[in-house]
Image (cartoon, rainbow, N blue to C red; front, side, top):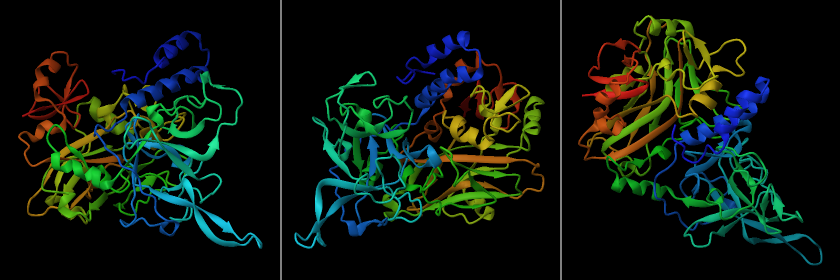
Length: 520
């Protein structure tokens, strides 16, 4: 894996530890940073050249207004190229994610007291102070959905621990440090965690990089960072209008990322899932103390999970043209042993779950009117997360067995998917006759031959628009036809999407050395 600047000494430290650690717990102290470095390297990151804006704060009487009236912003981390969202600690601690929801800046107020009676007679703005409403409530929106200094997104309104100030970054347009309002370091010493600071420095919102003394994280955000010049402590406020603006210039090489049109594309905690419709499935762990969440369907006769996208901008948000739909997920044909034995014996694994996109979907009877693609079989990404998962027949993949430290769904949520594995993607079109809306999802139609213990897991939906002038739709899948000849020369086996071993490359998608190669 290419080092993109996130490995540091994690690899060399872990290698050295193999010779010195006597127990698994000792070794894990070195393996965990290595795993985090891999996840940081594998993370999706935005490539758009955002302009940002000077954000507008709203009045207190607009608290809880999640419709399109009050201005809201996607809060973007300049250094990490990700949006402010949540993870860790019940999925409610500040963290970075590829996609999040828009948040709102609210002008903070203070009471004006009568000089004689001491009673409240009015209120006045606190200059330069704001509340940030996240719309990820622990209860009701407008009551417990504010960002506080403790680093959580689902807190009540607090005039002492929840006010923020925006400090423009010198030399950069529309870039800010977000700091705890009126709060500064009280430490007398000027050195902290080996770094020298000015006494009384501001406490900043930023990616946990060691700047506040904690061990670095690949995605956790803290509220007591110290260095304003670090880009991971710098933020931009991005409007929905700016994100929609990329549609005008969308092309095969520079698509417009419209994933923000999908409400809660990662089934996150504290973010509503009301726009997702599903039967015989559930969001695993929702309500529990987990850092990430996935949707699963286990041992069911049929299943669907879908969302209707009807943006209020209509065809200005979903114009006619070519799109790529992506989702992380897999299908297991029966229990672990049954699926793996089919692969070992070169028998086809069943294709029962399908990703789809179409003008409308209300149930499996509408699947015929949609464009579809089979969901990836679970073994396709086997043996890519050492030490995590169920191992049988030489294949290790998400699964359950005695002694595994956490559940099969959690393996997918915090390891396999976070390592950028199990991406499914296919190209579809929205016709000129019916623009402005689309239904997306996964469906497993009723099948009386479905094996006991079959399993579907999915997370992280993405939607990208490529415009109307696409010469080669296959090319935008990220599968390069010309690589077939040079890849096959070093191949240890060629497989189709069913897991069947092939004697030679066939037309369509081939799996060669774990890489998807398409032959026209």
